[in-house]
Length: 223
Image (cartoon, rainbow, N blue to C red; front, side, top):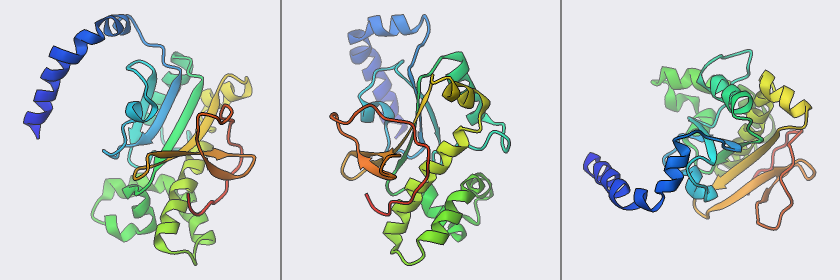
C-alpha cells in the first residue's frame, strides 16, 4: 500500500501539479475558503470529490462520527478548528455531513462492540443526546432503519453543539453564517439535506433553493 501511495505522489508531482501550477502558486500566498466541511474520518468519503471543489475552497474537519463537542464540554482540536475557520478565515457556511454505514454510529447503537477501545468510548460520549433520542423513538424499528435514524439525528445534535461555540453563535446572530446538515449515501452517491420547514432530510439537487439554517430536530427514519 505504501508503494501505491508513493507512486501517487510522483504522479501528482509529475503530471497533475503542472496542470494547476498557477492555482498552487496562488494558494501558497494564503487561503480563503468559504465553507467549513465537518465530516467523518471514514475512508469512503472524499469531501472534495463529493462537492467537486478545488484545493483552497473547503476547510475540512474530520473525526470519527463527524462530532462537534459542546464548547463547554471539550476544548480540543474541533473547537480550535471551528474558531479559526469562523473568526480567522471568515467562513460563511458550515456543513456537517454524516454518511450511511457509519461505524461510529453503529457503535452508538452497540456500545459493547467497542468496549476494548477506551479512547473511542470516551469520544462517543459526545453522542449521548443522539443515543437518548434514538432509544426513545426507534425501539420498534429494524436495525438498518435505526442506524439511518441515528446517523441523521447525530447530524442534528452536532449542529446544536456547534451553536454553543461563541464564534458560531455570534456569527449566526449577525446573519453572517449558515449551518447545513447533510447525509451522504455511499452506495448511491446521493446527498440529503435537513430541511427545517419539513423537518426531514430531503434529496439535495441543483434545483433546490439555497440551504437554510436548521433550527429544530427530528427523526426521519429512512432516506
